[in-house]
Image (cartoon, rainbow, N blue to C red; front, side, top):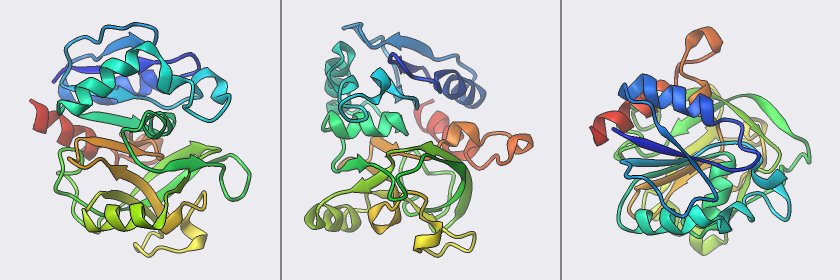
Length: 229
């Protein structure tokens, strides 16, 4: 599997993402500058976490208009899998590849801690190594992770199995106390219509080694590598 990670001014998780992908696939990803108009051949495109363009205007708004995004949208529409994490999720919504928006955390504070997620759909190339209802622990680090969409969109996401993860308690229950940012319906990650584009706020790339607190993110990258081998 060959992956391409897009680097924006202000990205800060590209090396963590590259390490996670290389550990799962055995192949070092390409790092692609946002200002390039050509995207190398890749089995997977990744938009990493960070603060693209300093999060001016809205988080991801400027990055969504970078030259490379035209190629990414075209590849995504042709079926190339795309993974957007944290700031990458924000960019995907701003680019129209995923519905909804990421707003300021309900607490109006930056949140940086481990959270628990409940796997909502395991029948995708991203989550095939998990079980439905499985609870995993991964870190979050964001100030604008409060997912919002209108009621019609939310119902469509629910009905089409396009909610990937929800914030939950260690026992798998959803509630305000276990929702770090106020996301509607405790949504932590969603898919596009074909489930080939995944955006999520938590950082699975920082949960691949138990020595660092959790290895629960490792299954996501191993599943992707196996599906795209």
